[in-house]
Image (cartoon, rainbow, N blue to C red; front, side, top):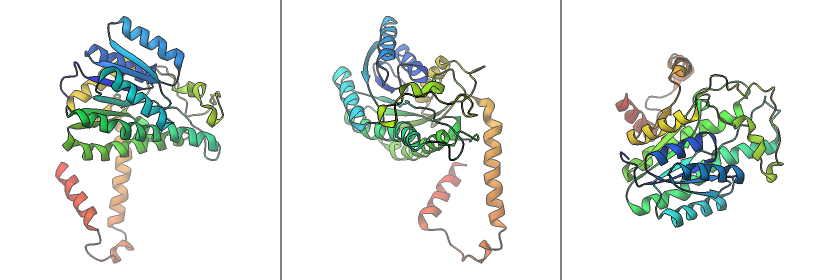
Length: 297
């Protein structure tokens, strides 16, 4: 999507942080914007600020852990603007903690919001984007934790790794339908994710303060301004980038992780146990996958 002017964007978690930065960037591009959020007070403030800046904006309450709520938000978007082109599945929360110390309700909470919310948002909005035939784009908010894992952040990283996998597969499925897919993988950004517990729904136990002593809650000293990330997302949509990276300084960490994986393949190639396997052991689907990715190298 080279030209966003006159198009419509829908953003979950749109009342603050990364979501609001995307909404602001889209409005500057001349897009109509529907911001969706679970925080009614923040939603009203964000809508007023966007409208004051001259943006064509509307807002809707939306709990991404509830498919019915997403369906309602999608219909409200169509009722307000007629079409939707860009969908940002951005709402997310931060549950962290050492192994065995994360409660069952918190596991349900982070999986329902971070992972199932992205799945539902994509499945519900896809027919609306396809219906107008003008193309579109999904932006799914992952994290640098989609690419590397820090101890203590495994619950968060598990959802973000899954979003990466979904986005990679959906990008292949949808490219022939003129619909792009991006996974946003930011490092530290000045957001309120460390205060996620303020909006913890009653079905997960209600609001709670997340433990400050946990390694998984980073300091925001030196963190990137969210406004910069919003502009980066616009760049990536126009360029149809699959991976949206905001912190190129993290490249050595990702390279090191990939190198460890590649060394594991090298060890497998030298394995006496695997040497006993018959030739042509890869199934046809895997052989085709190898060919496709070999062509991309």
